[in-house]
Image 1 (cartoon, rainbow, N blue to C red):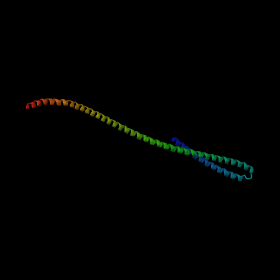
Image 2 (cartoon, rainbow, N blue to C red):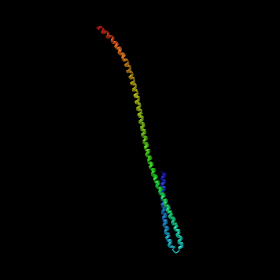
Image 3 (cartoon, one colour):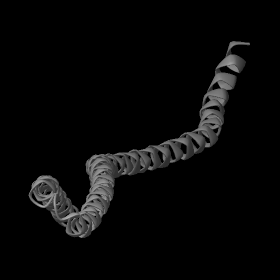
Image 4 (cartoon, helix red, strand yellow):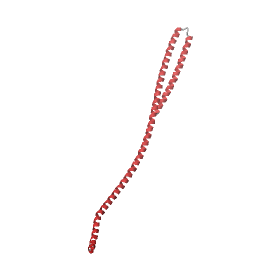
Length: 178
């Protein structure tokens, strides 16, 4: 990110330098045009010499114009690179913000997962306790069932023993009556 900012600062400085150079060249161009006018007036009688000077000035002027065009092209390129760098910076800032949102979401999900793990452990403990209580109840019910079954098996025997004990005495008392 700092590299992008440094690149952006360099591009801005380069842009400023090129603007200053273009202004300097424009001033130079004006100076040359003025010089040409002064030389025409001063050397009007020396046509041959004027012609040589004119050719030289026109060549310089064309070179200056070409330099201005080159500088303008360079300036345009720098402007395009600067715009591209700004877009890249904006894109990177957007991605950085998205990464931060994802980090926050990840942290929230981790906290939620930890909470669910604690709740899951609590529920597992509760289920285990309920299972143990159910096993104990089933064991007690099994014992009660066995006890009742044993008692039901003993009960008829007791009943018949009591009946047998009562029957002889009743039989004896009923035979006495007759």
